Image (cartoon, rainbow, N blue to C red; front, side, top):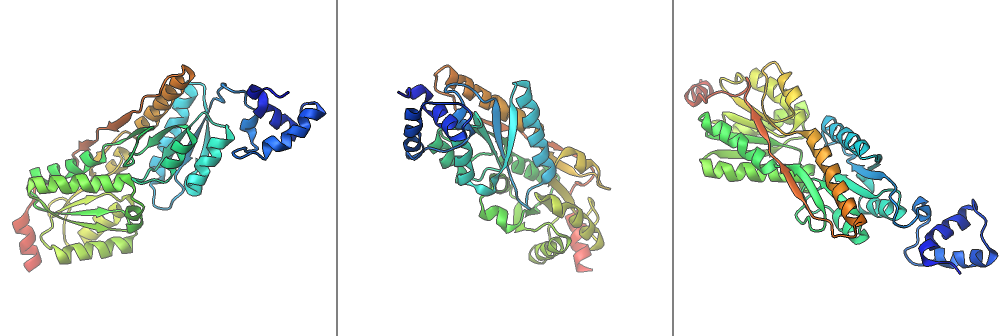
Length: 342
């Protein structure tokens, strides 16, 4: 008779032929394998209650993500995991919920870390349904039953407004990612804009939000529309890495000196912000910390399960920091109006 505790292992051995079993047991195996919910995979050979010491990291596979930051987070996850004796299995998010279910059913990983989480991310319900211990790098609308860590993007948007308002700017443009990012409800884009808009209302700052594809041509069109709709604009906040270089060039070519006539604040990592000709005033957060905290949260959840305790759902938002550099300056609205009228 096949004991329940060993049933999954026996199925695995029978199908791969690596261990002899009785003919009676072999006859029972096809019925087990055909049962609902059975998946033929390496996890079928893992002894019950044992850890695989593997973390699955689902990384974004998109053209509209900033690859250096994605890489930095993934490396941080890998480094933190190794300190706990874990390896990392990289998988891409192009499979969506099906990929989550496949990894969860395989048993190859003790837990899953998801990156690039949308507000209504369909992978989240799949994780709950599978009962997989999971951590999200990103904050969904409903994080129940999961742990998550993210930058406080709403606070980052508010910091941008406060800096420009303190410098006397009253007309500001927010240049964001392309429309596709907002259509898929990417949390970092939606929350930044929400925090920006709320603080602009509190500070009496008028603003325009314009999506931009980040190309030189696309940035030129976006800037032209902004200045046509609001020629008094003296401040620009950019949450689109690809648009930063073209914007600085286009402002100068159009007779708007940065920062005398136009201040630019970027949501941008520290190192590249310092490398522009006019070093960028930027709001940034510690990308490496995202990976480290995510791993610590997952370890905490796995340890709770091993102790047969209910894991604690944690939500950690990392505070952003604003570094003032050469691209922002007190507003010279009268000078800019004279330039436009000449």
